[in-house]
Image (cartoon, rainbow, N blue to C red; front, side, top):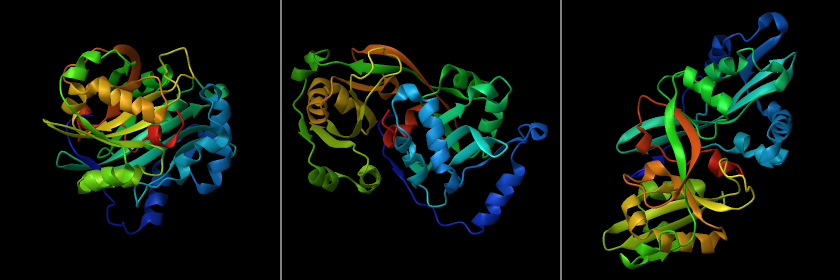
Length: 325
C-alpha cells in the first residue's frame, strides 16, 4: 500500500468462455489418477460442500459455513475464470483453494490480481504433494498477480517452493495513545459521512468505494494542509499473531496518502476506533517508508507478480473484505 490511486476495471467480455474453461480443465495437472484423486475448477454445485469443508477445516476461525459463501457469490471481474479449484477423491471434495479475481489500475499499470483464500487439504491427504498440485492449477497464467494474505506455515513453504516472494513480514498495531505526539503536529479534518466522502473522490477511488460499499467497510477522508487521504477500513476480529483472540481492531485495507495518515495518526486512529468500536488499528508496515511507533507482530503474506511491486499492492478486493477474519 502506498501513495497511489488503484481501482478495479471491468474488462470487455471475452468470447468463447466455455471453450476456454474446457481448455483449462484439459490442461490441469493430474493429482493421482490411479487412486481417483484429481483437481478440477469449482462449479456452483460445489458451494455447499466447500463451505462445510472450510467450516470444519478452519474451525478456529469461528467462520460458519454460510460465512464462506461470499467467496463464491462475489464477482469483481466480469470474465471471471473460476472461483477456485478443488481436490476430489471419488467425487468427494477433500481440498480447496479459492480465487478472488479483479482487474486493477495502479500507478498507470493495469493487471489482474488474484487473491487465494481458504487453502485447505483434508488431513488424510497431506504429505503427498497434493497442496502443490492444487496451487499449480490455480496459478497457470504468468500474467496474473497472485497473493496469499493469510498463509499458514505449511502453505508458506509450498508457495515459497513455487517462487512466491514475501509481501509482508509484519503487521503494525497501534493501540490508543501510542502516537499522541501527532495530536499537535497538524490540524486535520476527518469525514466519515458516506455521501460526502463519495462525492469528494475522483473516478478511480469512487469505483473503489462503490465496489466495497456493501461489505461493511468504513470509508473516510482525512484532509490537512499537506493533502487528503482516502481510507478504507474494516473490523478484524482476530490477529493471527495475537493470542488474545476476540479483541477487535480496525484494519486499514487502503490508504491513498500515507504521509497524511502518519502526520495525523492519533486523531485518525481515534476516529476509526470510535466509528467501529474497536481497540486499535492495524496496517501493513509497507504502508510507510519509515514506520511510526507501533507494536510489530509477525504476519506473513506472499505474492508472485511480474507487473506490480509490493508497495503497489493493497488489501482491497481480497478475503479481508469478504470474510469475517
